[in-house]
Amino acid sequence: MSNIPTSSSSPNVLTFPAGATAASSKAQFRDDALPSVNMPAGYAADECGIYELRETKEGDAISAHICSPLVVKGRCKTAGAKGWGRVLEVQDPDGGWHEAVLSNQQVSGSPNAALPPLFDLGFELEPVAKAAESVMRLLSSWRPGPVYLRFDRLGWTDDKHDAFVLGNGRVIGNALVTTDSVSEDLMAGFHTKGTLAAWKERVAAPCVGNPLMMLAVSHAFTGPLLSVLGQTGGGFHLRGLSSKGKSSIQYVATSVWGERSLLQSWDGTPSGFQGVAAVFNDTFLNIEELHKADPRTVGDTIYTLADGRGRLRARSNGKLQAPQRWRIPILSSGEVSLEEHMASAGCKMFAGQDVRLINLEADSRAEGAFDVLHGSENSKAFAERVDHACLENYGHAGPIFVEKVLRAKHKEGNWRAYIDSFCRVVGKAADVSPRDGQVQRVLKRFALAALAGELATQVGLTGWSVNAARTAAEEMFLTWFEHRDGTTNEEIAKAVQRTKDYISKHLDRFQTIGTTDHDPVDGWRDQHWFYILPGRWQAIHAEHDPKAMARLHADGGLLKTQKGVGYQVRMGRNITTGRPWAYAISAVKLLGAPMASPTT
Image 1 (cartoon, rainbow, N blue to C red):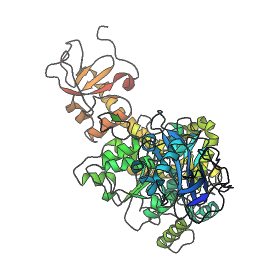
Image 2: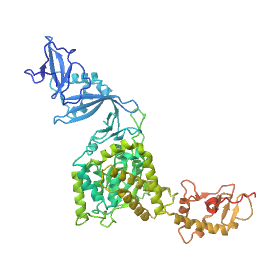
Image 3: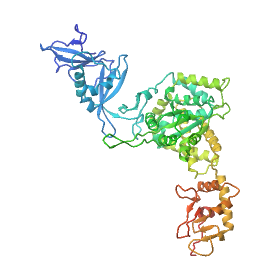
Image 4: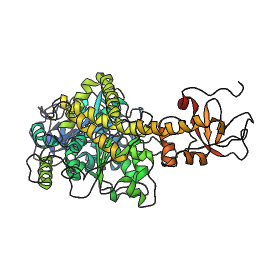
């Protein structure tokens, strides 16, 4: 209990016990207050706030109430041993506690620099002489032993994955962490309501039989796994007409981590999204209404969000400040695809953007975005039922999943093997070419969602049956692959066979490089390559799309290309004059062996 006795006639002045002096006073906190960490001599506290021991002109010791409740919990620094300061907790007039960080410069400066951030949190000075100066003396002399990591985002605090910072400020693990640079407005959505049991029954259960819905929830669990497995961010875009269920799927996915306010809008600037991404680090970023994004910059924003690195910026002194970093799974929605939206401004979507934000049709299922309505009269009634459940139950599953991942991180090898197995089995079922790098990256994203969904099920968070998340991810990948018209091994084999058949019959039409045996009617050859002139390539594949056939050869690993110039290479000056363009096809992979040497 506090050692501050009954007050005198002045509400702001208390009399210490007889014989008390500033040097001999030892303040203590109430049992139900925040823990005391070496409060300096000469100060005391109770539920009303902080008191300073002062001496009157007559030499008596009196206690002056100087401010509302305040605690210095520890000191702090960044991972680079910079940014030193104090970690405080202040109480507002409603009784709520708020964490704040003051730099050493603020603590050593004037009250005008240090106290305004505390005032904004509800901290109050008492109307006694030099109260502000007394508080500053308290802050500068209060130096508790604990040292906090000053962290600029949520998620894992380092690559050891021993501690994880949640949106409500709670830390899973043993580290002491403070996140003073993270937006409190965004963090406010990371809290809980209802119960996990109710969430499983009313939110997770309706996902059964709805693969798109189940995939989205599984994807929402992937955030804590990205760093552990060394994966980059990225995710899915739900494209479809309004009132088909896209928003409901996003609400369900968001409820894994918190309330609906966590759902962001594409109506933002590229730099603004960097700050948002840092807040959602290692958790889940959900963004709606793609049409609100600037079509001229949204492509670059996709790259930035998925790759997890902000832009370099200069400080006022000209030195570069470290860019923000993050890893986040992304779920987006809109009535148009990313490609369509960028095209509206005359911008071309690159393959790298396509695989970082994978387009999924969200209005072509049996009931709009759904397949099974679980007893609801129609898709609208089902969506409303799920929406209401998400308003009443949220925020439980994500943090518990983090705890489970932290305890099981030694199983990282098993998790990698699961992803590899999924990609191998599902890729074979779809006849995906192993050399189609873009599709393989997309396949891995589905595999990661399947893994997260299965892990969440194993630890009792979803109530789904074993392999339900995997089956949903597999079905949605196959649907995506079919819609995209992805490259199959059979398609590659047919295109390559067409080229092989022609070359085998017409070897004499290719001049051997280094000789003048005959004119290059169709091109050139050496031990390792056939160089086919564009006109002949067009003729070989005249009944098909010649450019698409070149892509198939590239996907099969038979085509040599030059960066940034499509599917052709330019012949060297030592081979022929004019340096014509040609398609370079591997002789070894085409014929199974290198061609005979020109000198033999």
